[in-house]
Image 1 (tube, helix red, strand yellow):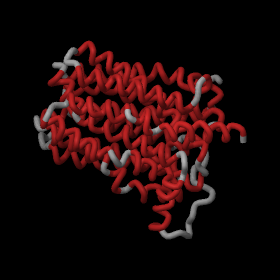
Image 2 (tube, rainbow, N blue to C red):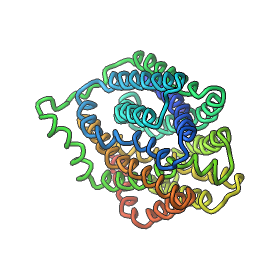
Image 3 (tube, helix red, strand yellow):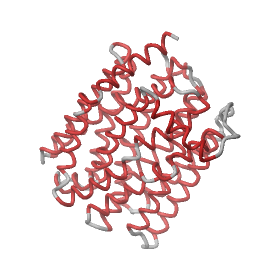
Image 4 (cartoon, rainbow, N blue to C red):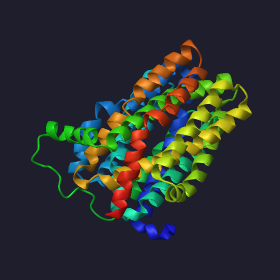
Length: 406
């Protein structure tokens, strides 16, 4: 299938998504670098990440009601506008020498809130602009773009800008959010669900998605598996800057380059994932992801050699698209539109709700025993999914096979 077959609306959405993720990549490296400049306490550095993930717990379920009652494209516009304003505020605090850990925590929370609204609605928008049989390819293209902008170009450029002036990564990220806003306004069509439950109370409607996910034989174990990934991923990401700078002796530029190497491997895999799934199965792709993550995490935890750290980053990078493309496609194919927003935010509530606890625990473990132990525990935890998630793998393949036949 050619990329042109995806259509102009998809590529308009892709452009907005690219700009937003480029900004994410800039702030992704800017936040921890600024935090480690303000404090050497790994717990406080991790707390900045904790506050970015808290919105998935605090506003996740109510956000789903909003996404199922209003136009999802305009919700993303508002969320990106707020994000740009928050980043501009960070710029002001840095320029005026008023930045502190408290400021970063607040900014992280507000940025995380905008991500809840944007990430919760994006899969539904993708499903609206492409055909069902195009979903694997469309999701793979979005995953490739996310990795290029969010982890390959953004982090090293953000680190370079930070070396010039600490405010520059945040200023550039704000501009990218505004670019995303401008592009989204050009996306044709209406993206409000046709069968929104306007008569239901807000409280009752907010729990629909959670009950839907928990009762679903595929989505429940899938969300719980994502929660495992999210927990250990957040723990590792929260203190990764500590691991890189203290254990491997790399500076800010090296930190950005390591993230970029991870991204390159991930991007390359996105061009093979649809074919890999077609020649094997959706569950085989997920197992491959688990194996790659486990090996990479073990290498991060067992070595102090920078060159091996880059090898580990390549292996971990291969893991992301093999899981995420399957996860996105399963949700898009199995869930009806009228409940999709609430399902998605409930799914994130379960799956990503573990991120604050993971980031917090990662900071405590790193401060007490060393950041390498976060990687080692992560490897064991994710590796165990090869055994504990076996029933889920079977259910995913059966559900996707039945969906293809229908």
